Length: 281
Image 1: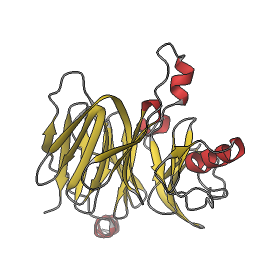
Image 2: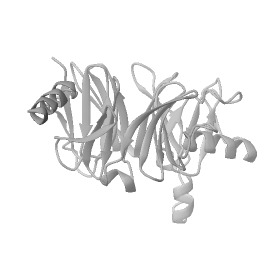
Image 3: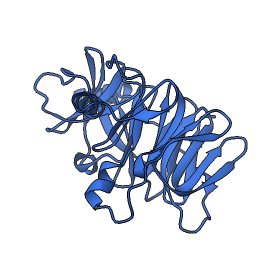
């Protein structure tokens, strides 16, 4: 009898399982040679981008072809949504149209190392940086935006500092006994940190909230990350995962996903050719 009572008590105390999302195809890319790589969202409005294409959806869908441009990331910043990509591509959405603010294509016979150094994938307002209001960065490159909309490479020592801050987070962000593995910025001064032992934390200032030990597919790499309420969503090897109350669970979703964006109303994902959405009633 005591075992039955304990079991019933455990069921009552357990957090209710989140309902599996219902997915609806919001967009299908038909342009030959193009593919999708990135998503950004605000409410029920979304932006998807990739090779030579930028799409904005919501009540209506508008498509813009950008020949010769490969977009690898979309970031929401104080200056609006920024699209970033190969050859130091930086495009800003001004509310009506996309404005190309920077593009520095590598010479035709450039080495793969140089091309890699010109890749940009993220932009953000680095709150801990007194000299850079908005910074674009990639695996190696860093550019700083000036007030007139131009982007410049900072001095070497500042470049190194900004690169560490952008990709590793602020110093002292790791909780006790955590050997930092990776850092992903979220909104404001908040970020998501993983440790080499697989634990993960949501960090804001000096406070850290555990988000659970990473599922095995996410130990090698995380392809995309976003948050909705108190839940963290990850894309790992094409699969969607959700952390709630320090527990990770796989979320049923379309296969082969490569991009993710969340808003207070909807969850968006994208594979190579389609954008999918699941919105609250």
